[in-house]
Length: 413
Length: 150
Image (cartoon, rainbow over all chains, first blue to last red; front, side, top):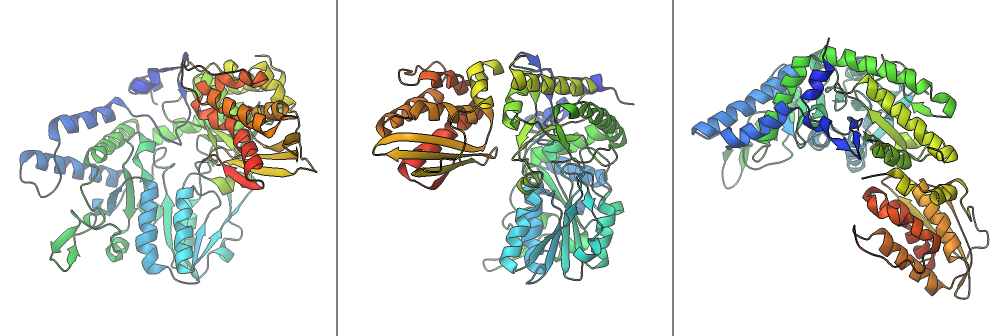
């Protein structure tokens, strides 16, 4: 059991008033708030340990290096990586995916090769592959989508063939909330010798993830969506694959020996981390992992599942008002992400009206333009929850939607 | 403070529910398409010019209440006007919408459009209100073009 009041107390921003109302923050798929321990971790680093990492023999540099590498260890055990060498610091999931595309893709994808994606990918897991395919003359194929927003795997064996070199799939959809059967997809990819890339930006903050159990070759995520700071992300890769990859960025920190003519690369992970890394934010992401593990990922997942069930039930009551909820309708298949559309109310108007009530939702295409278009709408409103949200906030959202419908329907409030 | 009722006043809501001059103008002499990639709002503006006068005007598309009511009031406001007068209204409207807090604006030629003055307090929505105007301006100056807010 988790104590939500206690958790909420750890997040200073949750006591803010927005337009005279208590903040109801339902934009967690975009970014999450930070507990005091994460904020303090940043302050503590700059006040007490600030120094550049590695190579230094003075006390501060050794302290900074220890904390920096300790954070890498925390991330490694958090996703059950075989070794912390497999954990490469990046800015975010987008950068991680770009590194895979530029480094692994450039070397291994050729003309006529196929890359398989799902139709619900975030632009960050679509455009790097489009660019790669364009440069190499490769082809991108897409899985089909069922009407309920789950993946249709009935034709998977026609889509994953000997031509398939890479399968890259989102673990949990940021637009629909769909939880994808990634273990099955990974197995299918491996059967034809293709690599399996998993975008965990919306999964790792909300559920326990075991990269060895899934078997994925790469796993990417962003720190700021899991209570960590912005500007720090992770690329996990299997050691034998990382060994064969060339660095995308070169310069300081990533070299073993340098002459005026040439250089040799440092070991993994430093081979991929040119320049002074984002030390403070890496350490604070480690603190965020501590915070999450202290609550327990199973507890977080169970609690959010109960929010999902409750919200699904509440959204059901809005069906008679014409509200369409996109994505799966079962909390087994869906994270706490609710994309919806109301006839006669444009999502932007709804977003402004809800903001007037202190409720933060996101409106637009959620960086998934082709998917939103395929739903037959130009944009949706999206409410996304985290472990610090309450059932009462579900009610506040639903009441807010109802009053917007009344206001836009007949002008009464 | 964001009080949404300052933004969604009755006249705005009325234009949203019953937009004036909504549809396609078959005998248009000028046309432009406007698009806001941030929210997906899209608007088409059709103008029929006779000499230097806006003899008729219509719009259609898929957009939010602010954008739609702004377009509806635009068409009401410029129909029958000379191009030069319409462009003056455009300049005046833009000045009102993009003014900084506390700054004054001239409402002499705006008529009903003044009701949208509250939009300036909602920075995220300014482009919604100006999209139809930029599209209209493009139709007048570079007929048959697309315009984007970004």
